[in-house]
Image (cartoon, rainbow, N blue to C red; front, side, top):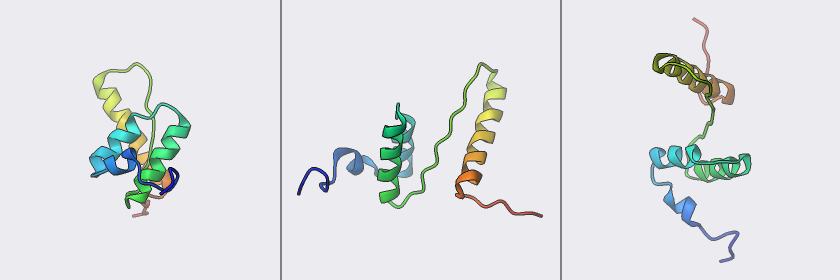
Length: 84
């Protein structure tokens, strides 16, 4: 196998959605994030990444993170918005 086709350490490290989430959370560049997303997708998972920033209270941070995660999932098509 060549280096480009051989399964690597990172790909073999994704044993669960939790390890996939940790790998994505630890990326520091867009390039690394894109690579991690591809590796996660190869495992049959659907990756979505978002960011939350700013100085807020714990309650406000929880609100922001919830909105950011739901928004990212809606924008990526991971979850579908349905009218009631």
